[in-house]
Image (tube, rainbow, N blue to C red; front, side, top):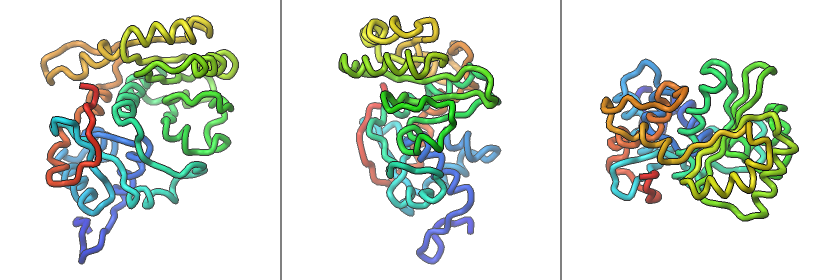
Length: 277
């Protein structure tokens, strides 16, 4: 059963289902993050070979950067159908990423924000969950409104303590959109801490003026792409920089598409992206 392809038919192992569900949760992931999350204790080569089998059998597809030096993995329709029955309360059918750079950055940033609540005391809700799962099935501490859908939410494991909302803003929105977001934070999420990642200082200025300064500004923390990515994308072993409260290097693993290159050798590429470079 170790070989995924047996007599021409795919044989999925229990760990394969965990891989597929993990990818659905985050939309797009690097092989390195799958290794850390699902293949704990196993060599990276073991993870890489298994992912190659899953991709070769049509459960996964690769997304390549424009220079073909980085690769991410996403589900195919076949892969999604395998985990469809395990998703409780699915309200909107779907699995694809519509903005790969944004989604992989959100995953990295949300993992960095986990350290705010402590590594062993949080419930992680991704943008995929917020979009696809019926709101009445999700944790009842999540704001019950359709005014705005943040990029992620982190909740303390216990009922005590404030939650953290994650926002990744790479492009400015319309004035009308920001009015809705301001109302969301004023009226529906006033007790949450909000962590913002901005493309640059110009986007930050817009959001500060339209949202943050008018909705409990002391609850909002901000950083820009330059500040966030610099320590993460430096060559391994050549930097001592880290983000405040860095969550064990998770964000760096998530953005490390280089190690997954051999997973995708000879496979089909479904989209070009620059992966924030």
